[in-house]
Length: 470
Image (cartoon, rainbow, N blue to C red; front, side, top):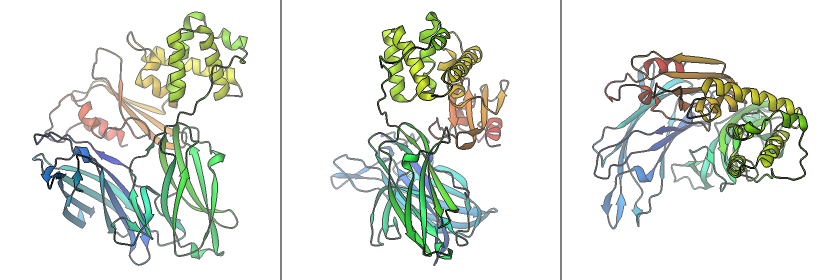
């Protein structure tokens, strides 16, 4: 699988400008494609949060205006520059809907720096500026798949829309979180050079993998048969109605007639879908060995210690039992939980987890919070022990912090968590940023880590920033 650009970079810079005092917020996403007539190209999508923009009155409605500057450089040489003004859609009856913009640039394969500046023209605040590294691969050679583009709306198009591609108008979806009410993921991608195959047909295999266990969910595995061509557009609604809460990887793989995998692309997403599960069955028979491992005075403690590894509907059950102080139901719940989680070697898995709970209590617990209630305790119980921990307790410019590095979490490689302690009188470190999907993300974490709250210069979190990027 080739390198995929960073997805969804939020601009969350405060704008304290007009009497409306609004924060400009936008989201950026980028995808790479290939066109035989134009070569390799990259598309940059912007989603503007409508309620974060300052508007002026016009014809019994509202309209705003933004100034946008983009540039792409390579080895300090400017390759592309684009500057333009963008008016918001006309907002009527105070109904503010998010809106989108897209820019497409043809680029030769290589490594570049993409920079963007956003300015709300109805605000006198400084523009928002950020940049990122991008890598353009050569999709013209060999049988390959483009980046996966997820659609907010996809419909047949006539080529007049800036969002038109291969017969479709595709309004991008930049969020990777799917709540219960969203039951499908509309995906679009392109397959290139399948006409190089010996056969005139090929297949696309769709799989969904649990990102934290690396388990492939057979129910969601499907195959699509396609005819070979220089460019084959692929648009499909992926049904996730029965997918329970969790972190997942949606993967598409191109396979030939011999079932050889030739190319693949993947899309990471978070799902929230609380499918009910009955933990209160009277039929459960309590295992004496299992129950002997939990003393009467610790039953509530170990019940609540399951919260860090539980889904939303499970947490509701835990809190309900804890509130009622029903010791019998608590014992049944704990055993039933581990029977469901680890049908084989249930007792051994429970005892291993119990030992981990005791460890996080010893290292992270305090007078205010139990170990499993702390951010570090939750991360440890949910993802296991980190591969490495970088600590800094004596910085003159930054609060005490820890960076936890994981070589692997489920299907993910090289993930990091950064915790800090703004109240050095306690041992309560707070998670302020992680690059793992579904966890806290804050691009301003270096500023929060800094003891100095001055916005001058660019000295926030120098040491921690370097370690986080290693």
